[in-house]
Amino acid sequence: MKQVKFSYENYQTQVDVNLSKLKEEKIVERIWQKDYTVWSDDPTEISNRLGWLDCPTKGLEQIDEVNHFVNEIINEGFTHALLLGMGGSSLAPEVFRLTFGVAEGYLDLAVLDSTDPGAVIDKTKDLDFEKTLFIVSTKSGGTVETISFMKYCFNLTGKKLGAEKAPEHFVAITDPGSGLEQMAKDLKFRKIFLNDPDIGGRFSALSLFGLVPAALVGIDLRELLKSANNEADSSKNAEDFEINTASKLGVLMGSLANEGVDKVTLISSAKLKYFGAWAEQLIAESMGKFGKGILPVDLEEVDSPENYSKDRLFVYLKLKEENEFDAQVEALKESGFAVVELALDSVYDLGAELLAWEIATAISGWVIGVQPYDQPNVEEAKIKAREMMAAYKEKGELPKLEAALTEDQVSIYGDVSSSSLKEAIIEFLDAFNPGENEIKDRSYVSLQAYLRPSEETTNVLQELRTKIQKKYKLATTLGYGPRFLHSTGQLHKGDAGHGLFIQFTANMPEEVNIPDNPGEDTSSVTFGVLKNAQALGDRQALLDNDRKFIRIDLGDDIVAGVKKLSSYLV
Image (cartoon, rainbow, N blue to C red):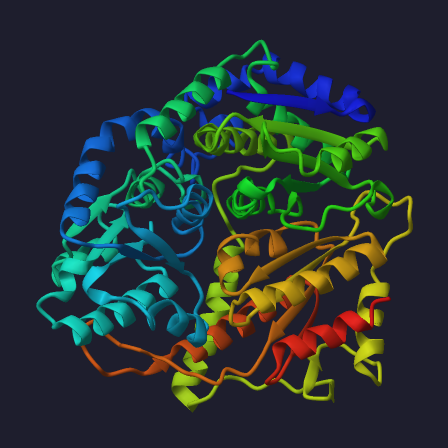
């Protein structure tokens, strides 16, 4: 079980009004009855997206099939797994692996979710192909990144082990009737897991998309789902919100967002810090649309109260024996910030927490007036990226941008009038920083790293992020592209439009071909071209939505370039 504490004295009236309304309109009961009219009179992309409510019970029915498969894999000598996926297909598996670790005798799981050619090489260069299982995971069955990863890895496996053996190293998780299902049949994958099609990707953590990878690393699915079922029972209580804390969290998030307190800032203890990446997608992609939004802020440095603006709701997630941030959280409460404290008994309580946040998100959508299950702006960046790719195929190159200025191999692109890089960065951030007392429509800064993921790069970007946070008291987010397009990308284009977006690119010294077809050597495009097209497409989608945007190319030295930018913010 978990302990939950709510502190929101300054917003008591707004929350109480919406809790009363929740009861009067029987919202809890209607959600569990899968009543789409909770969110809209139109059932489109709602009535066929509520299967997540059944995941805790349905998962128990699927345990035997999943465990039988896992035992078979282990008995054949597999020791590693590489999951190929994006967004909802990859985030929960990553949380499971990084939080639980790998049980003795089970498979060490890694995730490939970057189209950077260096990242593709990093994830595949040291694999023992004889002992590696590839999990191709996509709901739609046509996600361009996932299918590109699959074609590359399938060909690589065939070259290492022989074309006849390659299919035995591949499994698919997808919806019935998807393009991947047919492809997996044609290529003779060893196993195809067909998920409930009435579950949206970001709500799929407790479905086969999450359970199969979880079982491969040795997680006890029965224990995980027992936790989730206990949460389901509590969340059906329509009268007592000391029991139904998930619904109360949803009402709190939505009520505060309506008051401009729309930055849900996660403070997570060391053992649970990976949970935030999953919650980030769930909240951002569900809530950020039609000029509204709740911004999730994950892995920001925990600071003292005076360094935050009043647009923050803090959620502190920890195991009960951990006290890493107790003092800082207490100081935030004493300073009048709204705070939710979630203390879990064990990591297996993550099963409950996954469901609780799905319920809270669904109820937040009801409070702020959006339906959480569609993503109308996600397709915009995809369309623009496809246009860039079409231009590449026609002309042999992607559209070129003209730098506003270049300084020491660092170039900046955008509406820039300054004569130096330092002035340009400060001008961009200064121009949109509201006064101390302005809460509603307060800006946030999104760092979008279309870069090769690495610990060193992440560290210097986090340093830059912290400098911005401290100097401007603005909420900050950081995401690697194109990964974040499947996570926070919807909110970036769909919310009220107060974000400040800094896109980072750099030279890519290595390149990797994407096979046109699995099992064939011909290739008409590379991962580097795909990644650059996605960055250009995202840029254009942000500009088309009147977002405040600059692009910075770091040249050959990513770390030096980011450190230079950090040095300007004193």
